[in-house]
Amino acid sequence: MALGSNLFHMGIIILFFGHLVGLLTPINVFDALGIGHGFKQTAALVVGGIAGILAFVGCSLLLHRRLFDSRIRKSSSIGDILVLVLIWLQLVLGIATTYWTLQHLDGTEMVKFMNWANGVLTLDPRAPELIKEVALVYKLHIILGLTLFLITPFTRLVHIWSAPIWFLMRPGYQIVRSRSVGRAGSPTKGPAGVAPSYGGDTVMRTALDEGRAT
Image (tube, rainbow, N blue to C red; front, side):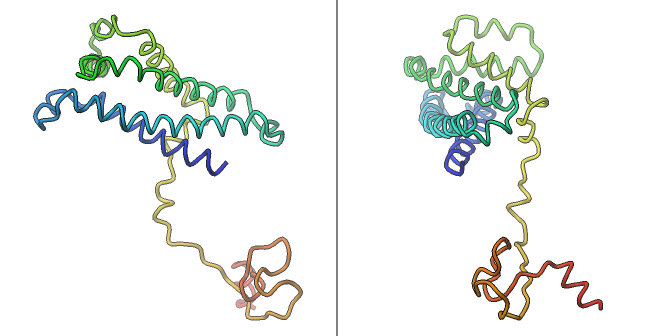
């Protein structure tokens, strides 16, 4: 769980923002910064390839866990499994595009997708024509990607819009302990079934406050 989740989220976050910046940034912005299409394409291929492999391995581990761990399988809905399967397929398609991308390292195909994405945002009816001649694997990748966005509000994918970023800035845990060590249990772990006390039995804050009040 830990390995799969960390690999998956690290990879998918890089892929998400990479696609977001790479596709939606106007081409003239890259031109003004002196970033060539070939360089951008190569950078996207390397970074995206590594992130894609990380996400694929992580997703495979999570999918295996959800399908073959009896406890997790019993608590999983059809939607939970379907979403993971769709993401896994999307990652496979993304990695598969590497073969065709290597044939267009000059960035010509990438420019088509950038113009298409900007056309979609501006509701340009001519946008689909821009990618009419690209390889089928790209079209499948786009269709499945848009499908994932479409079903996001109705699945666990909705949590991407409520990412707990404030968790990173939390002040920390506050552990309240009693001064007595003479009760049953390990002096370092406390009684079985409760949180480690490291020097005494753990006392809930509410119980301690009540004791002070009386």
